Amino acid sequence: MTDQRVAVFEIKNYMVIWRQLEERAFAGVSARIRGLVRCSGVGAADQGDYRLDVYFLAPDSDMPEPQVDIGNRRGAIFMPISDIYAFVDILRNEKPIFGHLRGDYPQWTSVTTTNEPVGTGDEDHRLNE
Image (cartoon, rainbow, N blue to C red; front, side, top):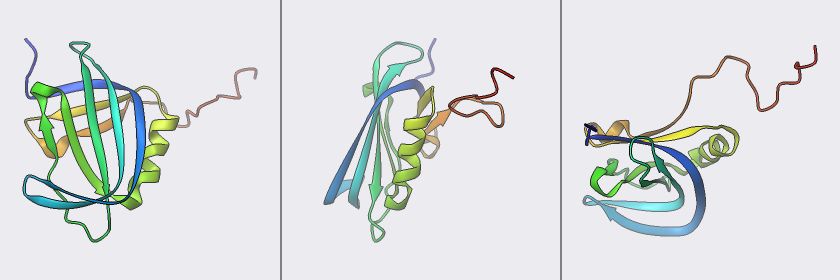
């Protein structure tokens, strides 16, 4: 039986959206959105379509709590706009990457890589040594 409080999916696609400024309420908290990275992929347990929206907020914005809807396979987390470059860099340069929707502890909703050996890069030039 699958745990309905937690869902893991492999992120297969992402889309970066820049905004001049969008104000939107999340659970009663007004967020000032400057960027959005939409991560989508396939469930590890059920092969369903999942999505995690990562909202990047203006420096003067309030920070909403993470939003998780396991039943609809959707989630949202919030970060300062200054983190967008590092976040997109991970998506561009790591594989595989997973989204974790945590209905039990929404604050643990996350994007992760797998364990890698120290010093592993995109290309290992020592193959012919």
